[in-house]
Image (cartoon, rainbow, N blue to C red; front, side):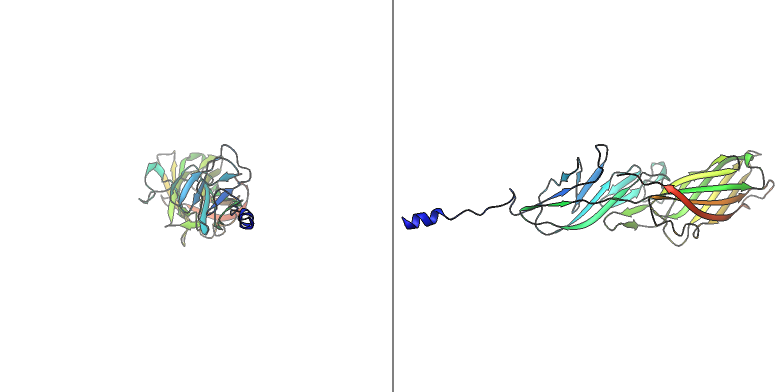
Length: 271
């Protein structure tokens, strides 16, 4: 009788979750909306984030794991944990073609987490903006700005890929092509870049005039002007200068001077 009473007091092991040998991970994104297109990459396996909080569909072994959260920003191609700015004219980013000048606002965050068995790890990662707006403004001096028909710019020495796990740009320097818009004597253009890359950043302008198809190619070294570009990505980076286009000038003899970096507006794309 005593033995029977003792055996009835022995309890089964109690667990806190239905998964005693594994752990769950729940992610909460502040300000998440139904229109957001975010992805949770856990150890290289991805899942679409369909709400906040969002629980990773797979239970994980109790150990360290690598987590990346990113949005499917327009104008990017994703290959594993590398985000590539799309090449222009639907070409491959690997063939050296210029990349598009205005991709969407890529946001990413990466961190190491430690999962505990029989528990749920709740984290609040904060994706950071990885692109920055570049605003260029040129004041046309000398000549007659009204004769300018078009201005095509090629900016080289910029990044075309971002390693979302490492949180930094990667690959080789590339270039982008965009157009300036003229209003009176001012030429303006906008680009959105992952950052500068390489030792030199060069801007080449190909100008076409209305008088007899005259052309002018002007190149300028922007390395110093863009020295601080890879900083606060949420603030627009504005650069101004003057462009000389005197009538009668020989082709290729134009000059850009007086480059200055001025404070730009806030361009933080809300999560």
